Image (cartoon, rainbow, N blue to C red; front, side):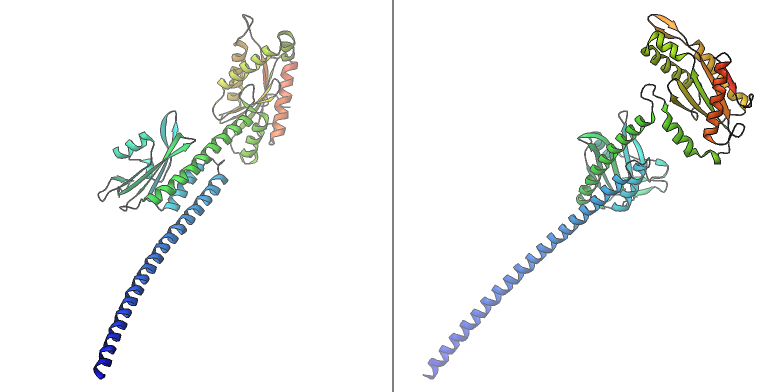
Length: 372
């Protein structure tokens, strides 16, 4: 009986041991499964956090870009933003003009852009590219920094190619697919901002110009002069008022269409007689106003306007197979000689203009000769 009990106890111990080992193995397998699952969840969580951070950055980028889309420095600001967010060594933005890619912004010294043959291939195709090499791909900048990682993304508006972003880094494999996806998202925002900027500038240009003559309008003229702040201007400048002689008679005799042709011809003649720093605007009706700067003396301005008067007198406008010509009267006032406030100078030039009208028309009267 004693031996039977021992044998029975030994069997039970063996069963317990087998059960323990089985449970232990099952537990270890479950533990490994849990740890693996937790690791996968952590990795997914990290990717999700990165995606959220990336999305957050894209939203912030979009807000930033759209805040400054009307700025003349928009492209420079975007390029600085790319450098800050991506942490790249160099960033360059190209935009298309007349079918060619033109560098619009870069932090590369002296805009000395060095494009490799590999980059050219992708740029010509207009597609994304990511190039990493343990050996230097090229040397960039004045310090000839070795570049080991390059990434390029096209800028497109509704599938229309309008530019390119190229970023570079001196660290091998710095550029990744994740970074490429992020840059692509930024490129989409940039494309929208550039389109909005171009539309804004076009609208701004329309608002600055006279719709019939294409020269500046009165509102833009006054805004520009106010921005110059005449009280702080050290150089001399002149205001010229111009009025076409007998314009009402021209309209009544030949009709408004011919009158429009006369206005356009007058604006064209005056435009061809002024310098790039001068400002010509339509003041109202058949009257024009000129801001003239950077002259040596008052006589040189008078001579300039006299040449303008003669050019207009000799110019011809076609009407029903006939050549017609018109004349204009001019009044010139000078800063400090005839006043220091813009409205005062305009009034002085206007007075001289009508004095020229009353004294026979088709002549120039200057405030440095006629003190009024």
